[in-house]
Length: 240
Image 1 (cartoon, rainbow, N blue to C red):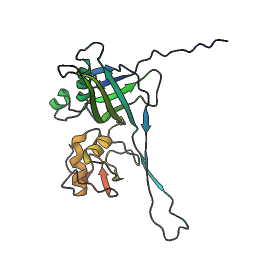
Image 2 (cartoon, helix red, strand yellow):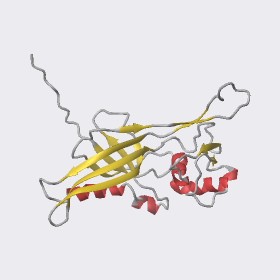
Image 3 (tube, rainbow, N blue to C red):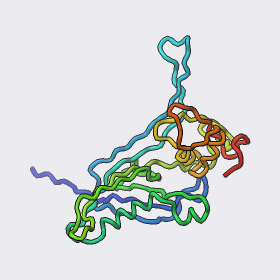
Image 4 (cartoon, one colour):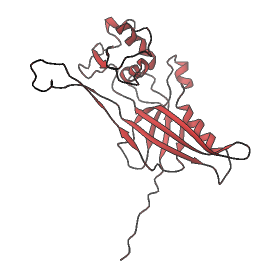
């Protein structure tokens, strides 16, 4: 008896889109698209939830956890680039496309709200790893060069962090734009990243800084609790 194996022809791709023009809006038009030369061999999907426990002297074992919120999905993968058969500039051109996802777009700069492109990974019918996000990490390793120094082979490790498209000001506790909530700082947090998650605008980090009396937005202590106000919260200062 013979067995026939069906070979999938679906090619994975990364699409860079213009970041939303307003909080809660969807991403804009396509800026660049990278059709992956080789489909990934592995995909790592990560998602976290945040819980808080209030110590209780009356609890026999431990206090019941209180659900604070759900963290974004984070997709990690490696992109392999090879130009040994063509000896052209395709490796560097592909890297340049990926680098575009790390800098503000011209349109966002013109709006005076700098933001990098949103990124979407797509591969056939896969849904869990296909979502709108931002590139949170990119590492490029060149492993082979032509006689003139031109890169011919590279491995790009990247992480895409899910970006929320909830309506402006929606809050997991009340849904009101003026609502406040708290966030427990974890390693790797920054006010800009928190502002992006909450408001869709990384430049709104000053709202959180002012609400918590923070002078240095990068000096956050893991475990500290931050007040995250709505953009129109009277205690948050002027709306940005």
